[in-house]
Structures are given as structure tokens and as C-alpha cells.
Image (cartoon, rainbow, N blue to C red):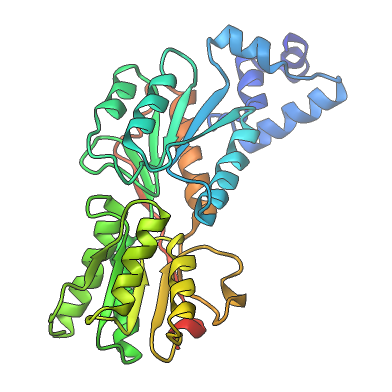
Amino acid sequence: MKVLAKELNVSIATVSKALNDSYEISEQMKSRVREAALRLNYTLNPYASSLRNKKSKTIAVILPEITDSFFSLAINGIQSIAEKKGYHVLIYLSHEKFANEIAIVSECTSGRVDGVLISIASETTNPDHLLKLQEENIPIVFFDREFEGLDIASVTTNDFESGYLAASHLIAIGCEKPIFLSISSSLGICTKRAEGFKVALQEMNFEFKYDPIFICNGNELEQYNQVQNLLTGIHRPDGIVASVEKLIKIIYTISYEIRLSIPTELKVLIFSTLDYAPILNPPLSTISQPAFEIGKTAADLLFKRIEKKDYNISDNKIVIPSVLVKRGSSS
């Protein structure tokens, strides 16, 4: 590194930051350093670097589940930044369990990782374990799902507005008994989407003969039974907005089994980034979230804090809008 610094007539610190893709260094200087490193056959040793800087060169990504295509895309976004920074990514799954999330966060302390990206579990109702990370000066950023009211950076989508848009769409296509199907009565993304849905109905002078917010929680079998009861009950809806992607399979399966025609008898719209939504029968209408961008932006924010300890990111609350994609299931 000394040879590179002498070759370019810059400090060793500048060379080090350029090779580690620090935001403090201009793209022009990074390019000069990389070209010189290539010419002089210099290779950065990440292990030696991490020992000198007392960093693990690892970040943790804590997810509630992995089957949802949103999180797969978000991980790709996170990885796109981590690779540039020379960092490893450890992926943990809470499986929507609060106790699992607490145990995982505990593992992330004591220098095991340099930062944490987290999308909280649907069961999470207490933030003490997250505040513990802050106390230990471990950078943390929420993505998609956040615990509201905390002084912690977050990258989310416009959940309230998306719920409002979904309800407006169902009413516009003639639904008289729309339902918002949620997996939680406390999880922020679900409550915001449900609130937007309900406000839209109120503004359209919708007559509430039943509660338009239906909670189906528990495991997949329990959710299946709850949705089946809804679709065969006296208040069977003629339109459904599902809050999460994993409800797609349940809704389509039950509709097929009870011979409920989509979209003739039931309009369906789901929050999803599923790439095969257009080829389902019928093609699935979605509120499509910018998953890759959310993951990428959250990682970028985290690394700004990792690279500069006095850089305050806690007041960053970034919102990236979702998009309504109309297809056959809500025609």
C-alpha cells in the first residue's frame, strides 16, 4: 500500500479508503488507485485489513422469512453494496418468532458483526434487544419492516398510500364487499396498509356492515383455515387485498377448491414482487415493492455509519414508493 501511495503521491489512508470503496473518496481517485493497483499487481488482503481496523468485515441481515420473493430481491440489493465494500453477509431467519429474533440479535454483539440490517418478525412487540445493539454502538438499519418510534434509521415503502391505492382500485372496479387480509394486528407494515385501506373506504362513504380488516395469523395451516372460513362464510368478500405475498397460494388454492371464480366472483390484489405473477391463472394484480432498491439503499446507509463512527444516520427515514400493477385477477 505504501508503494501505491508513493506512486500516486497521496497518503496511505487515501489509498486504503479508495480500495475499500469509501464514500469519502471521489470516483476519479478510486479509479486512479485501482488502475495503479492493477498495474503494480497489488491485491488487498481483507483479513489483514480487518485485524488492523478491529473490524469483522461482516454484516448481519435478519429476516422474518425467506420464501417471500421480496426478501430474495432485497438480499440481492444488500449484496450488491456489501461486495463492493469487501464485506461478508451473514443471513439469519427469525421465522416470524420474537424469541428467535432476540437470540439472533444477541449473537450480533461483542464484535461479531460490524452492523445489522433487520426486518422485524411479526411477533416482535418489544424493542429492548434492538436498543441493546445501539448501546453497544453497533450500527443498525431497518428495512421494509421497522419498529416504529425508535431513533433508528429505516428504509421502507409507502405502506399507507399503497393500502389506500389498493382499496381505491377495488372500489373503482365495482367491489361492494372488499376485505384487507393481514397477518398481524401490530406489525407496522400491516397496520399502515390496513389504515390506508380503511381511510380510502371511509372517504368513498363505504357502509361498514362488517370489519373490512381481517387478521389471519399463525402457521400456514391456521392461515389456510381462517381464509377458508372467510371465503365460505356469510360475509364472503368480493374483493381481497392481501398484505403479504405468502397468502397468494392460500387464496388461489381455496378459490379453486370451492369453485370461486377469480376475478368474476372474487377480485384479488396482493402486495408482492413475485416474478411469475403475470403467468398465474388468472394473472395476479400486485402492489409491487421496490425490494432491490430498498435492500441496496439500506446497505448503503449502514456502510456510511460503519465507515465513519460519528456519522449520524438515525434520523434517516427513507421511503421508496411501491407501484400498482393491474392484471387479470382484479379486472
